[in-house]
Image (tube, rainbow, N blue to C red; front, side, top):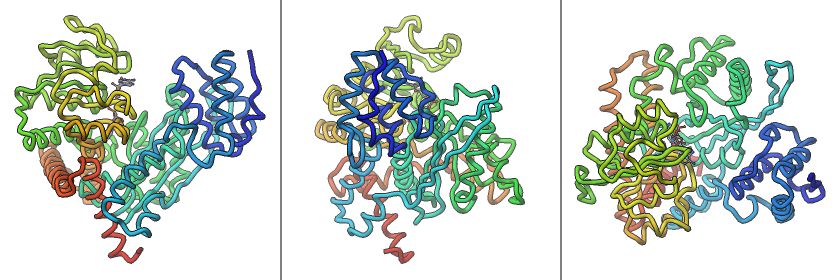
Length: 494
Ligand code: NAD
């Protein structure tokens, strides 16, 4: 049955950036809703049709939920329904630290919002001759400490709110790592899996050409993120280098080695996660050789963290991917898991293991937990069930502020994302330096420099959290915000 909710949706129609957030929320609420993803790409005039398509595919009973949600949204000034957006969470985390530091109100005003957000709409000619319009964003949060830096993601759920939050987190992440960058993030609302190689190249070149006005080796340096990779960066660099900009290798990082990529970049984030766990274990007097660990996510971050933790003597007893998890009390060797995953496409049903859900992976009786897949997985609902004494956030934003409070109360040490997964951007910094100096380092040199950055960052954050008697997230924020404030002050911005 097709219901027309157009009369309920006037607010949505006037705020096109809200619609994908709304649909994402709906999908999160009721995971069985299947929707026509193309509606993300539709211009405002036919968004109404997109919502109709959603209701159509959701079926009548769920349509009532759509109606209810849509009417709640009428006139909403920001955010959607009762759920917080990632930007709401980013601002809440910032506010906690700002209050604790009694941060100057003018500085707060400036740091609560990105300095500049560029929103672009651009056509892409598809292989079958259709012209589709895509929307993309680049949010530049703050550049007091240096040029903007942050990834570009391709995903159907990309929204302006998400990109704003991620750009803010990048400001803090770079400040925590002590690398001379500010924070930015970009994205295109698209499902890249539905595009051919040629369509992806056209989309990437068009998007980058449109944001070229505000990026550059000394202005804003993008990198890969969700569903973008070294090939995307190669297209970006090539596009930017046209129009007499020469070979602008330093305009993006995460490039293929042959055109200025850095050795050690692939493993950097997972390596950084493992280094911060080692540092935390020293403070907590945990013997890693006697510790067990569960890892949610077996992608780039999860699988490299797995290898480095195994090398440090940690026994990994559970691992999961999007299809589910595998648990074995006596431990799982990385090589065994990787070979099985390569052959079967998932870790589930690995011989000798017990199948578990992704939710159960988080609640296992282990010493260390590494959420390395998704955002918002440790929440007020399940934080009390977390048994690990040490949590290292490989993913961005896996823990909500409510969960942070519960974990802290329960004496769980949480290494926040802006510290734990900063190994990626730190090695991006090393790539940028190599590009600018035209002198390239060995893998050992890169790894050594990364280790120095991570150990120093951990020590500073740990010290700040101890001084203020707060959790490490707030400690990391206080440390990072203090640096950005000092840079803004000395530059005469406030
Ligand atoms: P990836 O795509 O390589 O891996 C993601 C993993 O998560 C895959 O194993 C996938 O199967 C799994 N997954 C997907 N849905 C899941 C679900 N519902 N439950 C459990 N697992 C699920 O991505 P990645 O590069 O490893 O990034 C993971 C996280 O780390 C993201 O939050 C990303 O923003 C963050 N991060 C990555 C880097 C980096 O350098 N790659 C740097 C900083 C932060």
